[in-house]
Image 1 (cartoon, one colour):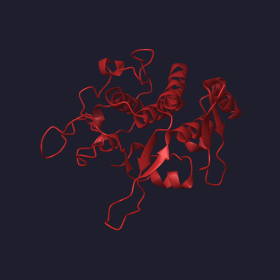
Image 2 (tube, one colour):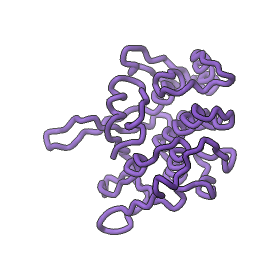
Image 3 (cartoon, rainbow, N blue to C red):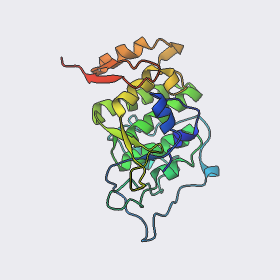
Image 4 (cartoon, rainbow, N blue to C red):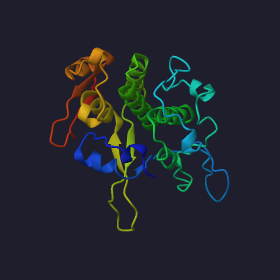
Length: 246
């Protein structure tokens, strides 16, 4: 299934990842939801016309969109409360609709609700990362300080709770049996690059008061307990995030 960011103007960690974000993404983890019938998954997402397109986000609780908080499922403004979001299941590979649903979302606010809902129902580094990206995108559009701080919480949660987690992308490589290969990319490095390099997202760096000095991101990661060996051009695919051993 294609992922939502594949259709936007965003650049990412490397030229390879830029290419990957123009194609399908596959999450290689067990799912928790079952299809509604034997013929496949019923996709019951709200029509696009009913999804929010504004940039005003009322946080339903202080930790909404952060592992392990599930209050987004009680948010009356969440349009995806009743949506069946089915994760990849190796035992039923056809019962997987997450990225198909995500591809129909056109606003950052709706993307936040979708990925926060997915995270609340299925804990994974991938769902946390996409939630963080949605908050980052929404802050870039709205400039709301509460959203900026929530985006930082979500990115940090990726490192604190899902260190070593991966997300999978496909980009047109097939095996001898004609199956498209899925390649893992570590969320640690995706997070650090999204935070450090504005060009990796085409959104402003998540610093207060219009500050654009990326070295402050390195200091912030240090405060969180991580060291980031910055990725270097031209491909920006050699960054490394390590845990500080105090």
